[in-house]
Each structure stands twice: as structure tokens, then as C-alpha cells.
Image (cartoon, rainbow, N blue to C red; front, side):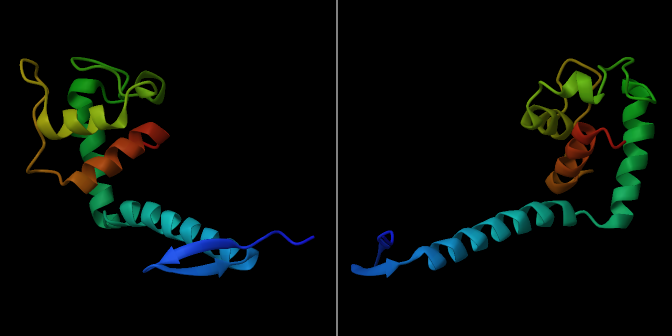
Length: 126
């Protein structure tokens, strides 16, 4: 026995969608979501990525330790940040921490660059 097709309402008209169409729609959705993931990573040009890696090691490393295991600032290793929300790190980088030596980098870094840096830290690919 064949499964009944789903009904979809578009502009007050109902259309039947069979298994093949649902499979196709699911595939398109997955490709769209994957495309958005790659788009976020692709927004930082490779040449700028090299600059950001250097900045992370040298500038951030001057307070967080050259190996990012801590110093004046806390450690930024994968184990140390694993339980911290990514948004917290992004906000800290962009806005700094008032009352601490952590300066804001808003204006020097774009939100896309900060997103890229935070993902780099979570991957441990520094």
C-alpha cells in the first residue's frame, strides 16, 4: 500500500506532494543550510585570514599567552572555552571587558572576522 501524499497550501490552493518531491525539498534544504555555513566561512578572504591568525597569536597572545594557555588574560584553549557560549566570546572580542585590560576590537575587526576567529579557537586550529 502506497503512503498518501502530503497536502501543501499555497495561496489558498492545495497541492499534493509525493515522496519524491518531499525528498527533493529536503535535499534542497540541506544544500541551502550547507551553503550558508560555507558562506560564513568564505566571507573572510584567505589573505585576511593570515593577518587574523597572526593577530591572534601575537596581539591576543601578548595577554592570553603566546600558546593561548593564559597569562594576564584567561586561557583560550579548546578545553578552557568548550563550555562557554560562542556569543560570549564574540561579544567580548567586539566590546571588550570594562574594568579589565581587555580592549574592544570593534572598528578593527568586522563581525564576520570575529565569527571566524571564534570558530578557529573552538576548532583549536590556531
